[in-house]
Image (cartoon, rainbow, N blue to C red; front, side, top):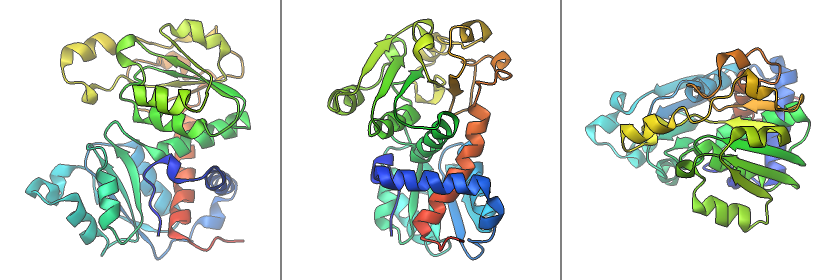
Length: 307
């Protein structure tokens, strides 16, 4: 039995295998429509989520399986003081696999240690969000045809952005990936990512403050919102929230084959006028998320795949 806490839990070969399976699911969805008819997914979401929770639910239902769970801590026994370990022991009696989101870093790991079913980390605080990373990798590979030899710009909240941290850790394992890290001083990437991941692996990267300076060089622009829920006071959030706004004027600086990704939800950081640009890929990215979660569920459940 395997769990998924971090993209690093998967080798490059395993990552590529999941992405290959997701691509086949995209091409032949009918082939996979009943492979999980007798399986149940539990979604244990201790903090609000729209895309990730519904994406997991859609993925399991697309495979023919059923879904049970809760969408906030208030509607679970956590409100009565039940521990994560006890909750997963109970849920293991009801379901075959579990997706857990929790505001505390490491909570899904604690759950996995007490669980008798596979546990997928669906986001733990500002730490990891591995299925978003798989989604991002599938999106980039589908749009650009490769995961190596690219220059990717990561823009916005790089300090608290778990999607950014996970994506960097995954992409450094592919050759010739260059990062341009675009953020204000207060929201730069944590030192452990800069030193232990980028510098330690001799990865080419630079840190800039102006989005306009980076745009002409990018193959992928990964925008992120400034996350209000990660700030300790309202004043700092208000000061930072509109620091970057991507609009049509700025898009004139970008390559014709550059694509824009965003883990969503978006607030102000991408103007709605950009949505009609063929390089805007963030809603396609949502659909890729369903395919990759279908592939991950099949992999962790070790379901026999159709020919």
